[in-house]
Image 1 (cartoon, rainbow, N blue to C red):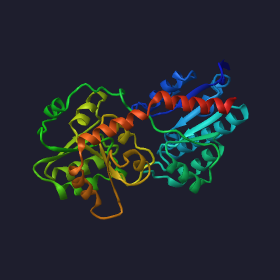
Image 2 (image 1 turned 180 degrees about the vertical axis):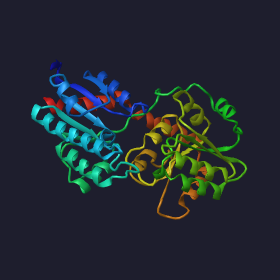
Image 3 (image 1 turned 135 degrees about the horizontal axis):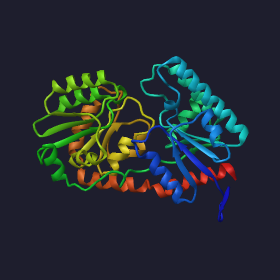
Image 4 (image 1 turned 45 degrees about the horizontal axis):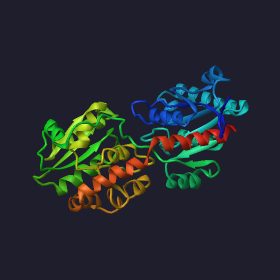
Amino acid sequence: MTAWPGTGYSPRVIIISKVLLNPYVRLLRDGVRTAGVQCQLDRDFGLPWLRAHRGRVDVVHIHWLEMLYLYPRFRQRLRRTLSLVAAFLLARIWGIRLVYTVHNLNPHEQPHPAWAGLVNRFIFYFADAIHVHDEAMAARIARRYGRRRGVHVIPHGNYIGAYPDACTREEARERLGIDPAAMAYLFLGQLRKYKGMEELLDAYEAIRDETSVLLIAGRARDESYGREVEAAAARRQGVRLYLGFVPDDEVQYYMCAADVCVFPYRHVTTSGAAILALSFGVPVIAPRVGCFVDLIGGERGVTYDAARPGALAEALSMVRDVDLSKARRAALAYARTLDWAVIGSQHASLYRSLVS
């Protein structure tokens, strides 16, 4: 290992993630490098990978662990799980430090919850450090898994500059065919059952008028569910459904056209979608749970009690009385505090503390 002046060792870090369309891990890598730590990305981790990288890595930082082992076929799932467990144990013997970022405490729409729960218990026991994005998640991990030592709260960074952002509101609305005076609600992201699309459609129908539009843009992870959402949207007035993957250069059109983003998730660990909205200066409507409490605060949008019937519809209506210009400024100002140079430095300090 090489020395970094005044801070001790500069570890060699490899970030493991199969999720690469989301720029999160790339932005994290760049922030860590800015802090003077060697860092690269890789897509795989297991026993063969660990043997191949022995002597070339000091810290392995794993993201979206479930994507490394939760395969549909039993034999493949078993083989990958055993390879991971063996790699965790061997890494400890070899002195390689393991960091795990909790993006999803429970894998979404998972047909094997007991299996995932066992692997979670293993990683929460053996990882040298657990990284979470907020104190609420740290508390949940302590309650459920008893893990309190080595839990590090470092926020999710922003997406400012990560996507093209060169169009005006007028240009975006013209491109999407939206009336310049319309109140535009937006849901942008993967369409998945836990994200509450049905609740959003029902709530919008309850408050819709001729001066509003609901935009839903994103790819359905499950094609049959996509067809369900498509059919439900077709039965309602004022809903524009853009079903399919939204390329990076088109994200700006939806964000710039929107007055507010709506994320009626049934449960949440971390919401990169909400941070993306804030990074474009778009206020957010979301349930008053988990990370949304801190992200939205009192001036960056509207939160509601998801357990109360009609609360989402009330929030959709209530946001019309909000000073949206002020909310947009507050959203962008908050996003700017989530600077990757600062966050990368915090991660770099964590890596150094593990190997020094």
